Length: 230
Image (cartoon, rainbow, N blue to C red; front, top):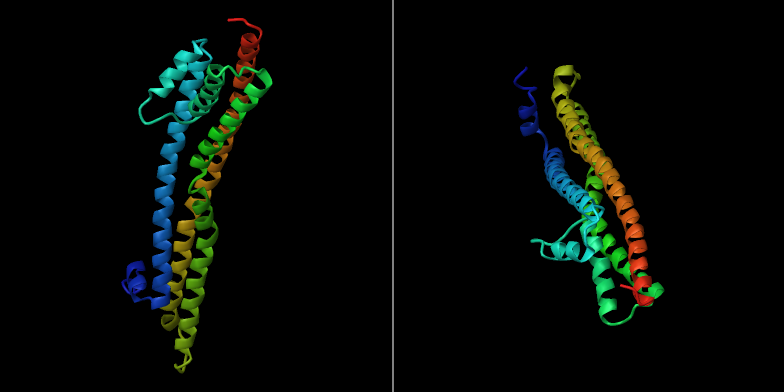
């Protein structure tokens, strides 16, 4: 009886619809864990890059030097450095063209930084919707397999004279495995989605704050140039 009711034997003996449900849940779980590990590396790398750049930015170094250092970085810049590069590039372009109207210049810089920030946030949020979908739908997919398995068990009993626990137990057990697999796929996805969504929001707040502070710095530079200063 123990061998007959082992999870592996029950999965192998399950009906075709239940096997399909289990296969879908296994694929969903693999997708979920792939996204979890990939997103973990991406967010950690982005946060570390933003921390390093923010420390360098507020150390009082020359902005042109910082910009050139970011532009030479292999693989491109990410995080806060990307927003800085977009804003300062727009600032330099306007200055080189002689367009140093402070209000117009700062508006253009802010627009460039908003676009860069949107790209950064979109990159961080990519695949989070997939995690949310897996987390919200996997339990129902597993429940469908459970309902189908139990239904088949009772249909099988209709041709027997008496219903015994030994007769109905295997079908119910295989059905409950589908529910367990649905929860196994859903729980990590939900936890990871909530955790990573919170981290993305926190980074977005940091980007907003930096954009405002950097805009103020650029505005002072623009007014100094417009007044004929150095």
